[in-house]
Length: 221
Image (cartoon, rainbow, N blue to C red; front, side):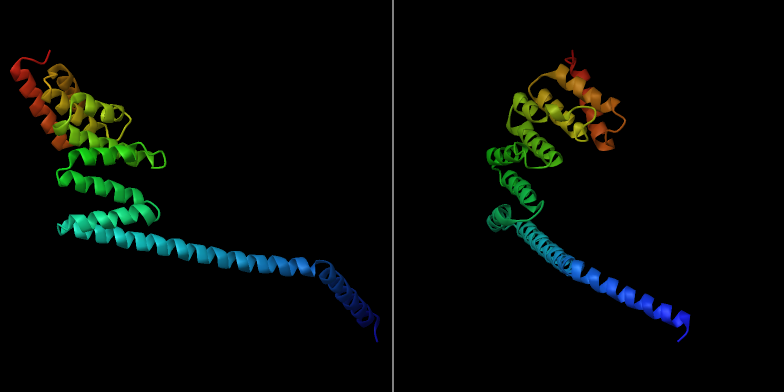
């Protein structure tokens, strides 16, 4: 046997002994880590499947409720929406609350609709954007069904220059002011809409029309 062969065999034996020693020392940990990875992966896959299934089921239930509503089957739609509020997943429960309030308004139950929208607006667990939309929806109903104070208490906070709902909020407040004969307040709000370059065209046209109407009455000051 050559010296090279001898040293190679010795080196191989040493490596095997080292590997055996390492396995005896850390083998249990290695196996445990591998098992943990497998179990963790299985758990994540299972959880992901579970959440996707719940989301899909809630989406299907919401779609079915909308179909019932579009068919004029309002009571059945409300029942489906109430069920979704109770056991829906993700954003669907709050969407169901908003849609349920809308159905109340469409059915002429304005007080019930306002109360439902107010409930969403007051719920700190609901995302801010949806709470703001609920405030606006309640305010829009109250333009015809309530007082200027009623509308203002819902939408005043939405009229700030940085709020994306400011145009609709200002229009609602302006129309409510005009309805109560607060023409100076109405004129100022319609002017805000006209001065805001981001005001939608149709809303700008309405604001222009109302501003001219108020000026024509000679009562804007």
